[in-house]
Length: 190
Ligand code: IMP
Image (cartoon, rainbow, N blue to C red; front, side, top):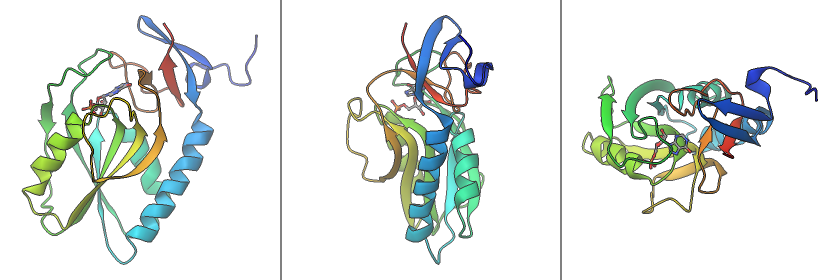
């Protein structure tokens, strides 16, 4: 069977390392949703200059696409945390790989996440940043697994898509560091 785009990054099905995945959310849908999220941010932060903090590695594509749709003055920076360590479920251990390089005191912070699963990583990061007295912190996550969330995150204001409690790759998300270059988001089938 021939798909319109028969390249690895456009496929309906994809193998990533030893696992098989199928398309869950196309890049087309992702693009549309990002425009809607950016419109909310543009309205909510009008007259202010928020700092978008991309949480690496998973959010690098989302941060890049989101910032292109934001039409108010905005800064962008990154921090790096890791919690899955190559598996398909949360290890609950968070490794702090690199910290913010800017002073966030008095600033409006928007944390940009790829996915919120148990929510432990975000709680850790929010607690760490609150001590530095930003004016505000909100979170914009591409994906949310509501059934996996262990406690409410009040700061989680912008969510791209809610998904079932299943393992996904693509659009920045990895399995064993692979699959980040898939254009859409894929769910594990076997
Ligand atoms: P949490 O601390 O359990 O909310 O996990 C957050 C982090 O785990 C995310 O930023 C991802 O790096 C990783 N993660 C959670 N679910 C998935 C998934 O389905 N695929 C790939 N990585 C995931």
